[in-house]
Image (cartoon, rainbow, N blue to C red; front, side):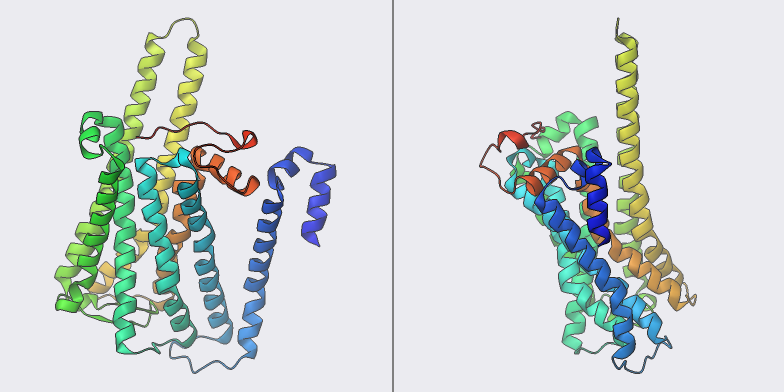
Length: 374
């Protein structure tokens, strides 16, 4: 009823806003799906209070269990629409067939795999407060989580490195990425590296076990400090430094290029300065958003792991929060790398409004600009 009232209000009073929010029947159906998701979110906790809950070894109340499980289900469901839409438009829209979008496609596949192959185990463990599956499923769950987690971080690092080389080292870029086949090779290399580090505990370098505070199967960090140093210190911190450095240098280069254009322009200096200023602001916002969300989602869990390795007793509430933040990266990534991208915005609008694509062209009402294939 509230959605109907809002639709009628925008139709009569805010016609421009109505065309943006309800621009097609597909958009209206998307709003209905969101309504059902919010209904499930707020209706689920009372259901958990009615259903018999097992004895909880973590000492949580029924309300706390209901809230955590409901939030985890919402996180899992939220990971799917954005990532599936990113993969759909990349596969269907020929305008998005570029090397950078191959890496974004690989990142979306990683996030979907995390949501479908690992998060269900996490949700069940949150509900019961313990691990209720066999030891074999323990190994599979931990292997999946570590593989997808490391692959996701490596993908974000490769995207930043790809953009850095493209802007600052064009000659090197042509040698490293002469074709899309090379991009797929780097994607395969990401999966191989992630699989190597995640399977190391199966060969004796590390040990998987149930982490009560995380509510997931994880590595026993205290027993294998060398593994912590390599994975957290090498892979995660290495990618963090690379992402910081790459986006900072990209911003510096673009800003310096804008200043040089303004210095050599004649006549329309005000227009050039305004355009350069808008470009700097957009680039800074994008770079700042990427770095901030990466630190917000992966930084806290790394800090908690380091403190646990050092022997500190971390409260269960903090441990649970950092795991929620870590899994939130799976639905934040398509927003940062896809929805915030102007090329993807046009593709999403074409997908939701037109509903179909041709092989090379779309209908006249759904045309956009042609992106750079490199």
